[in-house]
Image (cartoon, rainbow over all chains, first blue to last red; front, side, top):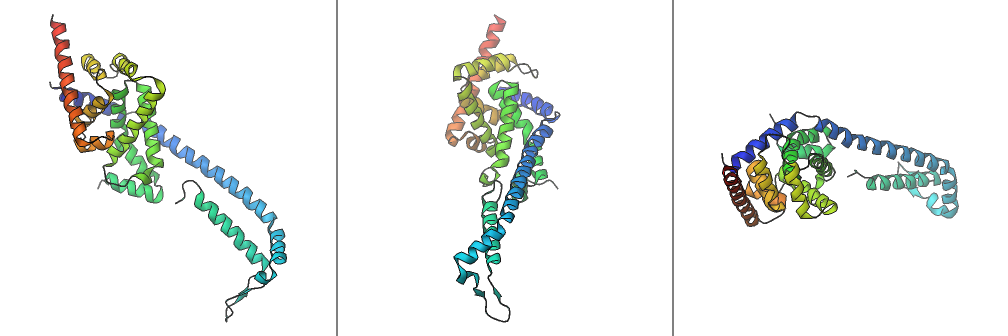
Length: 110
Length: 176
C-alpha cells in the first residue's frame, strides 16, 4: 500500500466517523443561539431608546420651534399638495435620521 | 438537484440563510475536522479549531469572493486558526512531539505513519494531508496554505519522500 493510499484510507475512515456525530447540530445551535441573543439585546436596546426618545419628543419639537422658527414654518412644495414643516415634523425627521444611522452601523446590517 | 458551494454561499450571504450555511457546514465539517486532527494530533483541539473556523467563515462570508473554491477558503481560515493556537500554546517542536504521542488512537491509523507525519514540518504536513488525504488539487492547497503553487508542490514531494523514508526505516527496524 502506498503512502497516499494509507492517508486516503485513514482520512475516509475519519470523515465517515465525523459525519455520524452531532457536531453540526452543536455548531448550529451555538451559531444561531448567539445571533438570537444579539437580536434580543439589540431589540431591547432599541425599544428602550425609542421610549426615551418618545418621552423627549415634545421637548425637542418645542426647542426646534424656538431655535429655528423660519425653518419650522417652512412650506414644503407650495403646490396643490403642500404642507408646512412644523416643529413636530422636524423632530420626527431628526429621530428617523438617528434611527436610520443606527441601523446602518448595527452588526450584521448590510 | 444539488446546489454548488458557490450557490449556497450566495444564498447564505444574500439573506443570512441558515439552511444554506447549514448545508455548507454539513458538507465540509468532517473533512475539515479529519484534516485538523491529523494536523494537530489532538482531537479536542481539532474540534475547537474546526468550530472556530466555521464560525469565522459564517461571519466573514462577505470576504469570500469566489476566486477560489469554498473549501480552500474555509481550510485557509482553519490553518490560520491552527497556527494561532500553536503560537499561543507551545513552541513548534513540542507540537510535533504531541502529535506523535496522541495522533494514533481514533482509527486503526498506522502508528508508524503517525510518527512519520509528526516529524514533518507543519507546512509539509498540511500540504501532504490536503493533497494526498483530503483530495485537494495543488492549486487549492496553495490557496489554503497561502503559499505559491510551486512551493506547495515542493512541500508535498518532500513530505512524501520523508514519509517513505521514515516508514522504510521503521520496517527495517521491525524486521531486525
